[in-house]
Image (cartoon, rainbow, N blue to C red):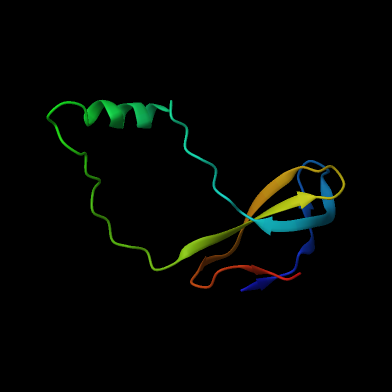
Length: 93
């Protein structure tokens, strides 16, 4: 799926449609001190062994996200493009 590198989109901070720069969405690193991480570390201590996750059916496609950065105010908003898509997003240069 191809997408333009600049699009007109609604900016909730400017409260109007402005030109936005499109970049790929990159997930940040997990926090080491979050509650879920601490709970998991506590569960695998001692002789308990590894904590396995429940087996779920594998989804066939991922939601493709892009980050839209407003050229007026500089704030970023994420947007899901096209629901679930098997094709990766390719930004035109």
